[in-house]
Length: 220
Image (cartoon, rainbow, N blue to C red; front, top):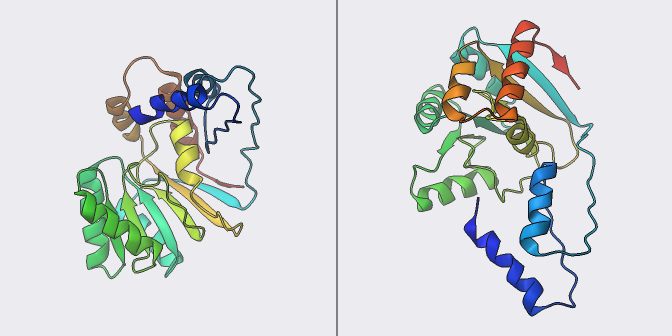
């Protein structure tokens, strides 16, 4: 997704005798194979860690009243750092504004904002001048804030791989953190609008939504 990454294979050409290591937080088998190919690694050793993080707790809830439910989440995590993920930029702006009017300390973050404003909001979150970032998936790459106590999906993720990445930002200090998701039947339509082709991710997330809507639960 970053064209500059394709230039990294030049390192192997210029430094043939130097060990080359590539690290990523989440990558499917196909992506791992592509990394090896793009970096021109000939005799590579692949080490894949466990996805299991015992300090993360998961909860899915059927949508009844979106605003009331998200307010309850923020009340439970008063003065704690968290991320609320929304599908669209418009939803990010509207939700952040509404929550601020109700006394919560949030800031928006999405690719439609200018770079300076995004940087300021990110820094405010890291320095804890605000409690919650309301964001699209544009937020998170390169963010290393250890004490994020919750990640809340106001809308479902676009894929299981995306979900793994997004919840991975919670509880990096090893303390308990909760990953919550709000689900409604119409969320399937949103996913269809963001998915193209007959992709496994689209169908796997669709099946997950059907399952969780049918029997919302908390699990560890």
